[in-house]
Picture 1 (tube, rainbow, N blue to C red):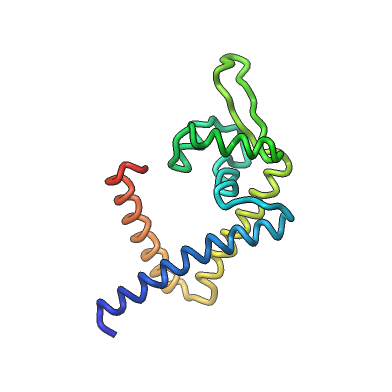
Picture 2: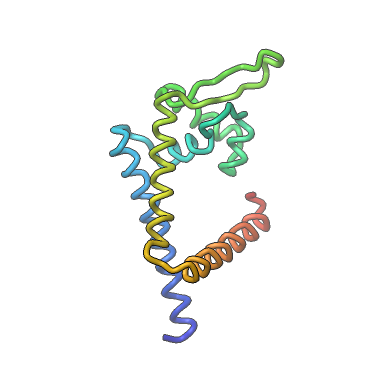
Length: 154
């Protein structure tokens, strides 16, 4: 296989993997939680995090969206019972959000899905092979981050 054919094959595989992971992620989480959430709602819950309350601007930055866009989605998650809003005692203009028990369950299922994905990728590999995969993934991540910075979306 030529270098170009190899690159084209890998590119096609990456596209298929990305699309299928998104579908599988949503379906897995919805089946395990017995809920009906969009992938955007799932990622919003993940960005809110488990540990402490987050501001809307912090979550929007993690998702690379505007606070206005996030507000629409967050309103739906509040209505569905996954997220609660808290106003700061010191400054009532500051609104923080945190996951409810129901939201934390989605978060846990989502994290488990991602862990299984990573573990499956390197299953049965030697340490040397795992290092090659880590390097390849780091190269891809570096490229994506650079492109996003140039497009001003990060």
